[in-house]
Length: 194
Image (tube, rainbow, N blue to C red):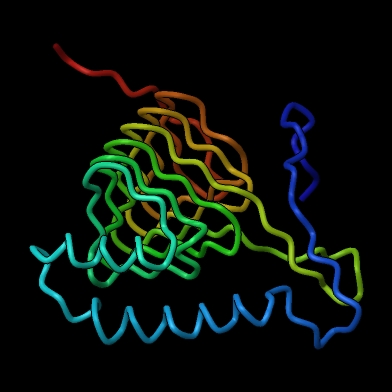
């Protein structure tokens, strides 16, 4: 699908690899990822929801930036914790997937609902080796990403915006905008009473 002429091209970082077998991650990063996967499964995934502080502790130990008291469901999946920033009262719901090959920042009081997928990684399809490309995903304060929505790399979801269930977000969502569908399109504006 050609890019929307009104949408600026997203800045994606491409990992240059000498051979198809090369990893974009250093040996140290690969060891960290291995340790993280074991730590989450053995120390966090089985914990009841009220043990949120315990899960946040392990996220901090593995380099996540945690401000205030966000909530991370024990069944949330976080690929690379040191690429994750959670602001106060942000929420990663049951089965939400923070595929943080690149940075993910979730703003204050923003909610990532069950099984939503924040995908910071893709591949450069114009190259035969399909090198990895990553782009930061930013979720604004008070935004809501509904169940099973899919957010592509390099996307910014504005403050107070809403992404409908199962939506596929291919371009930025403005503040207070409501989008739904595949690809996601504007269906309204979020307003607050009182």
